[in-house]
Structures are given as structure tokens and as C-alpha cells.
Length: 267
Image (cartoon, rainbow, N blue to C red; front, side, top):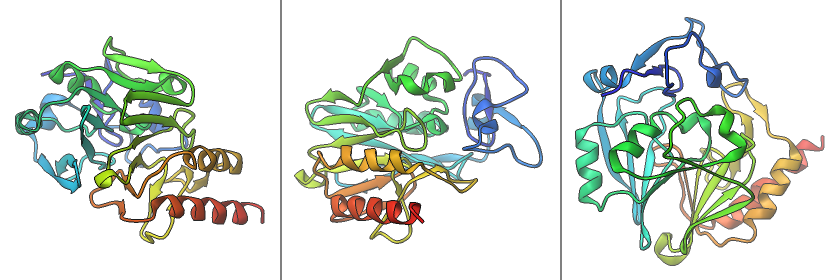
């Protein structure tokens, strides 16, 4: 087990000790008033956290920890016909998680929406011997460079015939969502992290540059994101948190939300 430092606030693992966490010092995140603090992979596994693995929807298995660690997101194991893909990443990884994932068929690749969820991605990649697909626009935020990281460019990347990464540019320049053509029993699913944020009112979704600091995303970025998503069919959306789902009519929810956002942004 590695002793490379992990930020307690955002869960990002770095290749060597350092006094600062660039991701937390960025205006889209924050350093707590108590100051920068660290743990490492061995200490995290030895502490109070335990694996949380449970179904989130048809063909989707959530993977996280209880109690929550750092930002608290859960990853999703996408059980596609083309092979299982891990979408986003949770910092916590123990033997139980590894065993459960292998029982479900393992992982063929990892893809991550944005730098707040990079966390211990290299530990996952080494454990399952798979590549990590990140958009090149966010390469400056990689805390632990590694040969397993494969950068892609442009607007879309086809992971497989049924899985497409789409760079929307919301939240981060490399902000990405995953379209699963065969998700929702063939009606299509969009996996969004918080690039397209599932909010309490499931009739809408949110678009923000910074969530903790309440900085709205630029209208031009939201407009482009809505235009890109209009080319894809999806009935459901799954966000970054447990049970964060838009269960139906998700295409219309995105269209309606972008329209409302842009109307308010003009005021």
C-alpha cells in the first residue's frame, strides 16, 4: 500500500508530499478554515471507513464508502455489453471492493468526469490493470502522473460502440459526461458526476462553475453543453451521489433546465 499523500478535503492523491493541494486552492473548491490536512492510502484503509457497494439502477453499481470521505461522491460500475467501465472514482478502495468488482466481471477502463473525482484513480488502475481516460483540458490537475493515464482530446471519445465520452466543458474545461446508449433498458442513460448536477427538484438539473462557492457557469458554456446533448438520446441521468437520479424524461429535463438557466442569466 502506498503512502503517497491524500488530501482530506477533496481526496486527491499526490505523487509526493507537498504543503498545498492545488485542487482545493482553486476557486471551484476550498481549503477548510482549519487548514490543509493529509492522510494516505494505508491510513484510509485502516480507519473507520468501510466499503459501500450497492445497485443504483439497471446495470449500474454504486461504489463508495461509509462514512463518506472527502467530497463524498460514489463511483459507478457501468455493466455495459462491451465490458464494465468504472465511471468517476471514489478515494476508498479495499479488498472487499476489489472482490465485489471482480465478481461482477472486473473493469475494462476508468473514465472520470473532472478533477474533483480523480482521487486515488491510479490505485484503481494498478489494481485492475486498466487505463484511465481523462480529457486533456484538465491534465494540469493530475496529482499523480502515471502511464495508466490516457489523455483524449476533442468533443467526443468512443470508449466502445455503446459508450461515448462527451466533453461539455461545464465546471472544468475538461468536464465530461458518459453516454451509455443501452442504459435504462435500452432508452439511454447519461452519467454526469456534477458536470450536469442532479438537484432536489428532479424536474431540473443544475450547471455551476463552483458548487461550494456558488459561482454560476458562463451562459455560453451552458448553451454549448445543451446543444451537444441534444444529439444524444437518454431517458435517465445519474449524478455523483447516492440515489442522485433523474428517473425519466431526462432529455427534456436538460433542455428545460438550460432554457431556464439562460433566461435567468440574461437578467
